[in-house]
View 1 (cartoon, one colour):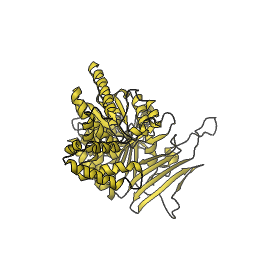
View 2: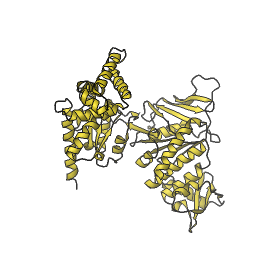
View 3: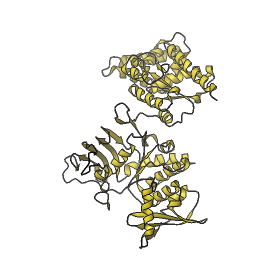
Length: 520
């Protein structure tokens, strides 16, 4: 039920996004916390920033907090000098190195598209790209980490209220403010109040089943949900920023919270950006709501890994489920691999669910993927299949530095689309049968497309892709479907130049199966 509700919210939020009065569409960071140049784009109203430790998740989140002028906030709130402070003492030899920093923002506002940047040289200054009389867009912003009241100094600060001669101010939360908490916690409150003195606040709650207690006696999850519920329930049109959303929360509650946040975003025109290490939180938003950050261990540079697909995400978050994973470059390559597997899996008595295929990640990215898989102990379950034109290339050389020596394979030919096209021409009778048309009809279509495109101007590597796409349209198929059909037919042809790939994949499947069978 929760999965169905999430999918409904994804469609509704994506449809409503163009009608949000405010939307932060992009943040670019240069020269801050070791980040040379990083551009994070926000496409879905609820964005999840994921990545390893020290990959820059919180840095992007705090940068987003500097995007707007916040009504009612102090002059030192939501500004880079506060959120990115330097240690520069009047005496002593140690201080933070001070680089030139630029934070650039792209917005959609009621007045149209706007841009702004914060720049630091000696001090922080705003710039509006030469626009006269420009000002920073105004918007409510909420920023917090859910792991509050977690260290002794915070606890001592709150307890100091009990030693004050003046009674703290008491404010009861409304039913609307604790509605979100009631959606996720296994009990109901008869009353929740805030005790406040200065900038110190302490929650007290009374459960309907009995008991009245402060947040000092709450679990981390209950405290986090109550705080979040009271603070964002009535915000409208705001930018909500939450660091490490999953802190103290059970995975089921994480999923419920993400559903509630997206429901609030839909009702109240909220834009939400959270950071996480949790695969549950990641899965709670659509793919265009996920932002993966990766810091290169050799260079220290941080990049957004836009090419991630579920196969990579699952491996890095320990959810491959013991499957053998094949990583290729594009959908034509995926089609060929599926065709080969159509022949091999029944022969080896391996289920189709035991092999996963990932794609749409360029060959130049394979080496960094392999390095990450090795770091997280997943490299044994990965096979990398490069296009034929990558043989003896720098991409192959870099990949072999991290991948297993027996896990780097190549597709036949230079490019999969060109190879599929030649296979169609070489065996038109077999291909026509697979495509549901006559041999003469297919031969004519192939000849016509050759005549039309082979002498066309433009990039030569795009011509086979265009011809295969046009053929797919003519026979009411997709390019991957045609590639799969050809891969299946050629895998059974012992004279085909796809046989080295077939044998390599067969060996990889047998190794994977034997290791799986030997596991306790």
